[in-house]
Image 1 (cartoon, rainbow, N blue to C red):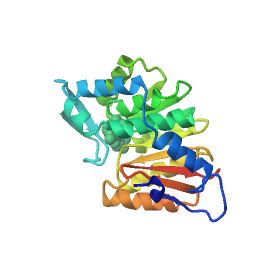
Image 2: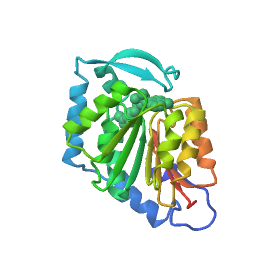
Image 3: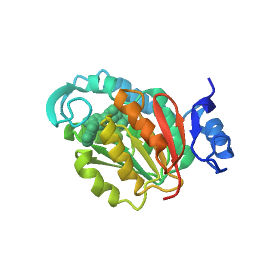
Image 4: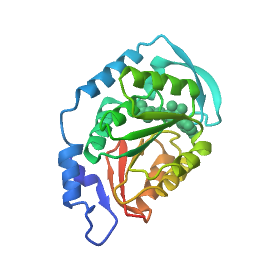
Length: 247
Ligand SMILES: C[S@@+](CC[C@H](N)C(=O)[O-])C[C@H]1O[C@@H](n2cnc3c(N)ncnc32)[C@H](O)[C@@H]1O
């Protein structure tokens, strides 16, 4: 099915982001639909396969759509790798997006084991990737994984998004690329979107994961698409891409 079916735009005037513009045509043909990836993607996928067999158990603090109240429990790493780490198809898409847009300031909400982080950070050495994770042992595990892959352009911050995000965002000169992949609920997702908008510009790319995961995420996605700063979106089903107007 053509990806163009999913691309919607919300401006009446001609802009470089219009669905039929060279911008969108090039994005689709040179990035989204492009085949072939780097050896690093295969190394990340090998690491994820190893994690799926890990005998290790870690303590997890849950601020997300699970319980959301900071409750603590133990979880086998192999279950986290199976259930929370990004899949190959989407991970490779993230990698291609970063290779294509070459963003300098990258933010990821939800590090988990660092698999998505690795796809993002390894795609462009000029990127400074800041990834935020609420669960301290999970974040420590992610740092180890990134180290194993030889990835050095990432800082993993520990904290509940609701508490730490405002200060993290205001410390950034700008946000060029944001991957929203934690706390998949309507109100928090919209709150994080609005906070990130403050440092976004006309070339910023937002990627929202799991936009059709729940009724709440569907509603959040509808509101994001209707936001006055949103010029064009692409619904790739498992995630949504958002391109913005300048502030
Ligand atoms: C789906 S996983 C992230 C997967 C990862 N981005 C990847 O690509 O492999 C979501 C992560 O977000 C974290 N998280 C969810 N809600 C959070 C919150 N409110 N504050 C901080 N971390 C949160 C969870 O602990 C979990 O590790």
